[in-house]
Length: 374
Image 1: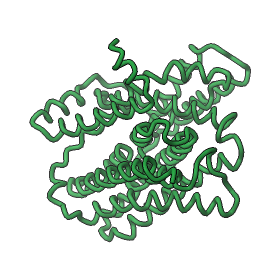
Image 2: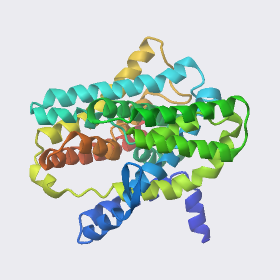
Image 3: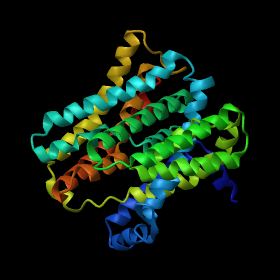
């Protein structure tokens, strides 16, 4: 391998740079003469398994990204048990942040939306895209405390779990109860394996596949299975799994995910500039609602003595991470696809998501890069 390239791959920000480059390539492809080939490749049919018609895009989002969530879940479990989230005050911090980051954006969206069809999309503004927010964060390298990454990942996961609950309660027409129970049974078996000290990686892999499969069939987003299965891995083995998966996730799975999901075609969305009601509601919900909701919730909890800041972090660090929480992107697009049946509202939501996520990512990066150490 070329020495310069090898050094680049070892750099902390390398995965973030690759993620952003693949995102830009996907966006350009989707809005260029090759768009038909780009979408044609992503929607290449693989076959039908269970309730789903599988294509390449589905494979990436509902299988490969489970591995990403599994790795993040391992990191969170380690931090909850022996790391930066191991005390009650530290553990409560991301939960409170996630709650604030969901409630205020929803209220802002509903306050702006008057159209009954548009109000269905309030869930679009509450989501945080953990992959892209962590990708932007990784561009900062060692300029910010490593403990902030744990805080960002933890509240983004709590936010994603909250978004899944929102989807299940408000945007899912049918849930398969039997499949859900079977997935829970698989988790119970994994927990039992942990408790008896079983070390066989093959058993954990097999049961994790079972949990993933039945979670997928239940109607709940399959990436939840990744986090739940990670919680069942013995603490002593977590480092081994992290070491095996970290480069695969950083340099392959996340860039592939970015290429498959950042290719958003603006289409008729351009025609709604200046933004219509739905675009404005999503934009303000993501950009202002997220950062104000997260930051205010943390400040309030600090004042009440309920939480404490991550080691080495200050309030500006928290504000910068709160801004990154407004990167809704793929999770917001997913909720929008469930909330809106008509193309007009979908295009308007798409425009709001792109603008809100872009502004949140840029502003969050600038705050953390230039102002957090003042």
